[in-house]
Length: 125
Image (cartoon, rainbow, N blue to C red; front, side, top):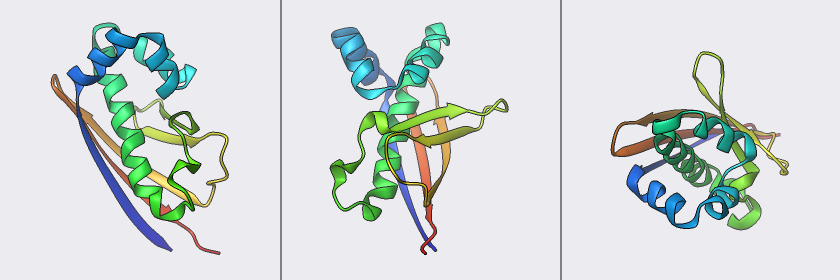
């Protein structure tokens, strides 16, 4: 077994500006339909949730980079962040064969920042 971690922090204002500047183009490049729907449902807090998911994907990329042959093997939309009913964040890998990697996330955000810690556990054969 191998355990790695990745952390990312982002200013919520940067994500808000990117969305306001590029709109749907930015959203559709980075987020899945389910992520967009979830974040937009948060109304005034949507930018915090978009920023948190952006940071989560960055943290995950950092945590799994040593398992990839090429860092471009995983794209933004190959990773989907969702929440259990309890609110606990979960990761779903889409379009990739990464089933041997389990990710545990810790996401936090406030008015100005979002920060994420991702722990990747790789079960070797």
